[in-house]
Amino acid sequence: MSKPVRVRFAPSPTGYLHVGGARTALYNYLFAKQKGGQFILRIEDTDLERSTEESLRMQIADLQWLGLNWDEGVDPRTLESVGEYGPYRQSQRLEIYNKYVNQLLEKDLAYYDFRTDEELEQIKNSGEKFTRIPRPENLPSLVEARKRFSLGEPAAVRFKVEGNKDHMIHDLVRGEVTFPEDMVGDFILMRSNGMPVYNFCCAVDDALMQISHVFRAEEHLSNTLRQKMILEALGFEAPQFGHLSLILGEDKQKLSKRHGATSCHQYNELGYLPQALLNFVALLGWSPGGDQEILTPQELIEKFSIERLQKAGAVFDQEKFKWMNATHLRALPYDKLWSLIEPRLNAAQIKVPNDNDFIHNSLTAFKPKMETLNDAIDLYSPLDDQSFFISDEAKEVLSWPTSRKVFEVWKSLLEKRDGKTLTEEDFDQAVNEVKDQAAVKGKQLFMPIRVAIIGKPHGPELKILIPLLSLKSLLARVEKVLSHT
RNA sequence: GUCCCUAUCGUCUAGAGGCCUAGGACAUAUCCCUUUCACGGAUAAGACACGGGUUCGACUCCCGUUGGGGACGCCA
Image (cartoon, rainbow, N blue to C red; front, side, top):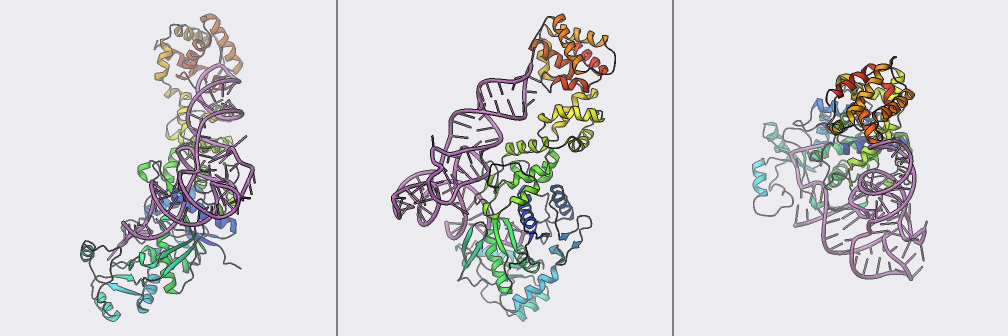
């Protein structure tokens, strides 16, 4: 019997998609998918100063990377509106807003305000403590105001707040929230440059686009009052609102740029997986109830419930995110993982073989060590002869009195061999010979060998690494190491 | 300052009046696995902000205090 579920994500195109925005988008998306409803992307670009087409494209790219695909809104390629409630960019809906502003003006529910910024500033600083800007003393008639306005006198349109009634909002996550109407003053509907303002567009569009539920950040909670007043004045039905707790930084302040990486784009570049970001952010302010923490997008859709939304803010814990990313990464099949890693190796100019054996063996060795896709760069670079170098850590091993002997024996063994690579068995055998001939064991044996192979005293299991390296490069490496002793 | 929201381990959370000696995960510590580092496994330490009610019984319900957050734009 209830209205069909139609939810929207309505970003303003100013920069990359923030992780908080991603979570808002995700919850709306999950709700729509679970209820068989529509997920709509609406662009709130009425701030001409800050909104750019470039940002719009970036946000769309981020949303697509996350796999949060919308049913209605702007087309990702052409940016044209797709859907029967368009256009979906507020900058293209100006006639619509005009129509409704005029309606309010004519019903005497709004008025032209000719005061200048300076006058308003003066009022604020007049010494009196206004919690809201007072309405102008003598309002001109609509006819007169329109005349002055059309003659070029700048004026903003303000909503008339009557100021004596309480508004109750049934918030989907917070329950009943009551706002006294007098907490807000006559607020702007239309700027003096003719552009309508957020609260107005949002209210009108939610109504016109038949939005059934609005999940948005808690910072909008008090805007809801204004939007409700607009909706009421226009005779529209209000959607159901649900205000999400904020995502916080370590210092418990609203997560912002100074907390480090906050945009989806940054996490993408850092080598995080979209499914990990979705999973992590989903659990910031919501939980599925049980002990399961690693969830696929499909599981999120199945398990999502507004009852389990958290009311208090949640700190974005980079460490846990990294762990979660590593977990998702290790769950990836080899070919998928390789397809994600290869472009990053190329970008870092690391050249390694790409036959199936190599991919399989190397990934087996490196997977447990990878937390982000970018970790592959450091992991694979020792396999590339061009970038072989001796690490600082290895210098200490080099200085051990027994190390040189180990290198020499290792080298002579390599020289005696033919074929392209060493097998695991070859290696075990060789190590035993080094042990006997150089008369060392334990740490004094293994660490120098490791240094002779990868230039570092720590790293993945040599048994797996050895078959990944050619005999030729093994030799070149030990020679290089010897030249440093 | 005014209004609104909020409060369980350091962090994310489970907990819908007795199941709680408060569970899980990340991080931390120790041990096992491993002749390295990880991965994996085990163990340990670690929280109901405080004060009043309500109740036979409160982490759970109500009120207050305190702490934290948000909003108060011709930003969204």
